[in-house]
Image (tube, rainbow, N blue to C red; front, side, top):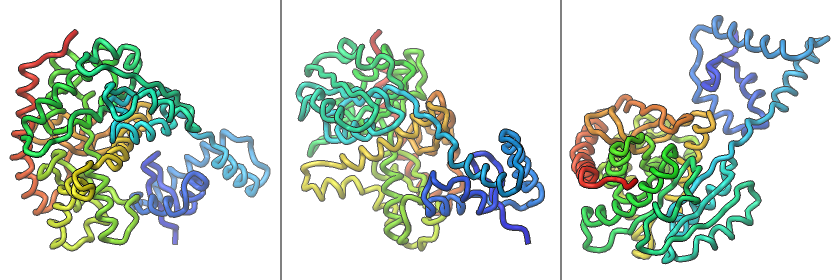
Length: 416
């Protein structure tokens, strides 16, 4: 009986387990390769795919000198696979605005560690907990290629007047900025304050790095992203450059599923759609092979757990902080995918962006990142009955929060 073949999505060709394992040996650990094999689609028409794999093997063999024996040929193929040069890392410039804050510092460190980052700018206000130049000096000692420089601005000054050197040439700008919500403060009050802060940074980016991807971690994201994207559009720029980082919801969903099932969260990938606050957060557990094994009666509680995870962290810190470290991790995960996409290696992450997959103009869903940033917003896929009901609730709440952002954009403009 012929061995089972599965299609490697990297090249669309079918391989046996031995062929796939041999090719990726040395690049990934065995468990990771096994998990990847499980993700690959089983080939139904074996003869056709076997022929394709054989043709590919022959094509590779042609590039090598003719072997005298089959044993030598196999040895050469194996050696070629092992010695195949890794794709060289790119040299991107990244800026973290708010880089000396609770999220900004760990996020800056993770960016400094990214092999695609050659230049890292850490920007913050003079009232930050530590000077950004100090953060830069600290990160400058890491054993990585990235050169790190700090930039400071006085409170009340305008970013557009101070960030030319910092932002010029940037490929990615991460914005973990804004004020935290205070007791008794309404969401609308918080939005007005943080929208003005975000607008200042976005305004400077529009002037000095209009082609950069802007990753927004400014609350409330559900309103801030539409506001900034519409302002970009009014300026004649691409609103798809404004990306709301909702990755933490995915990270949490994966972790909670792993804890519930006893599986490794690294190999769990629950899409989280909708928005990035409370009931607008909708994990699609039915679309992950591990999560969908969880009993249906436990899903509502799992759903609520993901929605309330941020509050759980605030409570655990006794009100003295929020989700800073996990947010930095999630922000870096999205940033890594954005940079990989810019380098030509397409990646998929959930993000909150301008969208037409629902009747709402902004929505979080799977997004394909490519050489220009957002390459495509992917459809929601199949939803079960519970998720369909929740989706209606998500849309109802999210619409009002989007409208707040749209109204802000209508009454404001970016300076030249």
